[in-house]
Length: 105
Image (cartoon, rainbow, N blue to C red; front, side, top):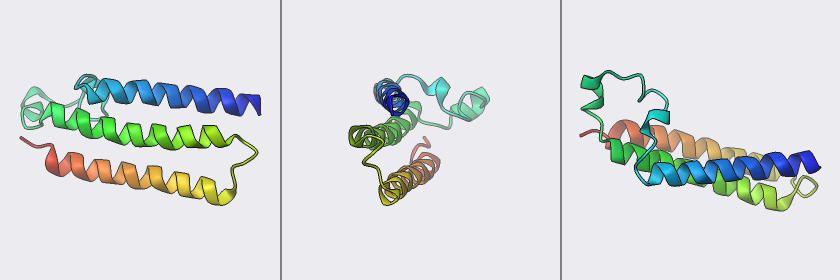
């Protein structure tokens, strides 16, 4: 139970801090696929918008993990875990769609 708390609060803190970095417009090199693009491909992407979309996605995931950490390991039912996982999966799918359609220059 203590291990659950340490892991969940650590992940919440890491995701929260990293989402703030992305929301500030920095950290684009950490976005999968963006750091491997050629310079010509990077010119077609609005880096600030991409960082903002990734930051919002990560912030939503951090909030879900925050609420799961608040519940603790004894109060999480299967339904709660399924709902939390679904929110994160839908958030990730929406972020991929928005990044591929709205973040072009």
